[in-house]
Length: 311
Image (cartoon, rainbow, N blue to C red):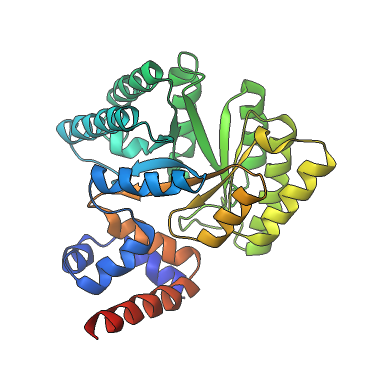
């Protein structure tokens, strides 16, 4: 019930307008979001790099409504790639196609993504296309495979979600293309007609997909904070003779920081997904919905910090 409520709130712009300047809400957001500016994001990446952790920067914002908004989002990403190159931090970027005009015009989205990928190619960088809700899965994978990947194979990859029934087949198809894939569980509310409703089934499918990617994939990103999933991946990779430099674990900014650092110390590669920007509210709500226990955990930490500050 709490998860459904949080997912509902994530789509309510009126609530976001109310909480935008709320100190407690911004305190909660700071746990998961690296500020609202490129400067704050680059600073967060420097701290991660100092710990041996790489990053993927995501300028928060989803569906845009006009061509001008889509082109403005493109310009933000071009500037972000420039800043990454100038600052020499170890980071790439993540992009949502709805923020690049997918809902406005398919060809507009293709042109914008080609602009971004050409800039990434110039720097020898990488762009991860995030997967959104299931209504976008076909369009995202089709655009990726037919319009972007043929030209920018070394510079672009996609995300697949294990809560969807179709994902094992998508993993196998992407492996055949030698495309780079990040596998995650999925953070959107989906109907049982397309997604596993039970966590145990999502987890089982995740492990199945991860093993397929480890055996046949091209440097997969194993995105999870679940200790059981991480242990299963490590054991499988070791049993199959798959070296730690052939894949990387990926985790969210502010989540299981202890585990991120521990994996690095044990010789594994870790990339942290670092979101930033003014549109942090929907992202925060989805992160809390993924694990409602985070509500009590984060609220407790923020309140303790606030009380300590008053003293």
